[in-house]
Amino acid sequence: MSKPADVSTKRLISLAPENWVKWVTQIPDVIVGEILNSEFQWLSRQSDVLIRVENPQYGKFLVINELQLRYKPEMPRRMRAYAALAEEKYNLLTYPVLINILKGTNTEIPTTYTSNVAGLKATQDYRVINLWEVDVNTVFETPLPSLLPFVPILKGGENEVIIREALQVLRADEQLNQLETVLAFFATFVIESALVQEIMRWDMTVLRESPWYQEILREGEARGRREELYSGIELALEIKFGTPGLDLMPMIYQITDLQRLKEIQQAIKMLNTVEELQRICE
Image 1: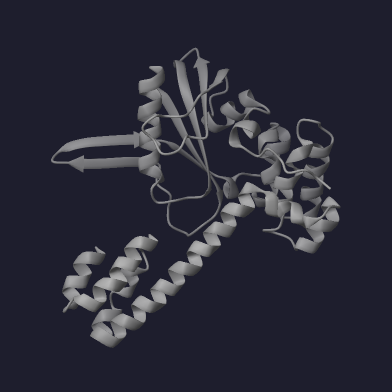
Image 2: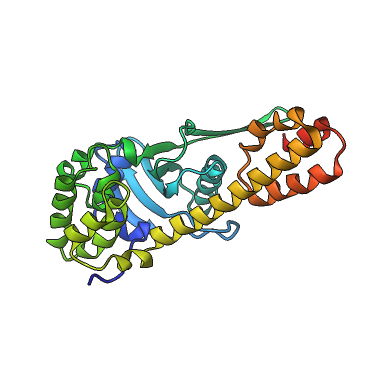
């Protein structure tokens, strides 16, 4: 049976940092320096991987790599915070990259953060890479060993032959063979679990030890709680306000924060008009 893999982003990128940086920046003559400490005193979590690089045209700068299982609406603000804190800590300009692993909604993913308060503007551009849009052949041709575990969810990687090829490459390299757990996890999104088990030839309970699996599990639990709240709010709106109340549901469906949904549910009991509730939902 396979052992749980070290699937941290730092571990994945460190397999071939120069190829990785050239790929995410599309700068062919970039020279990779060191992977830096990305913990920031004022931020609740650390950015995934911060790499110091150098290029004849741009000089020394930092590449910020932020991997997200699924895109979250707060990411533009977070990318701005990472870029600013990294520049302050290391006194170097930054090239921020957001890599989204699994496709969520069809909402367009922004590549810029902007704010405007009384005419004072803040802007932060960052590159977005959606793995489901990346051609699977890129992994084998470049090569990009860091992306091998994600082969099943890449464009064109959702078939058994390609997955077996990726597995062979992983198992042939001592540095890579532990990553088959991650490959198996993402394979379950595109082919039957029984086939994944046959391909891998080990107990699928190993997947449950993967941090990716745990995150998906938490995400599913949160989604279930949101659906319960949506149903409760819809019923309360219909009982108290009738059709005008139900007209607010499209707006409420845009709200995903569980605490805010609970507050809206409680507010329905206390407010007297749909207009009052609409102001709370905006």
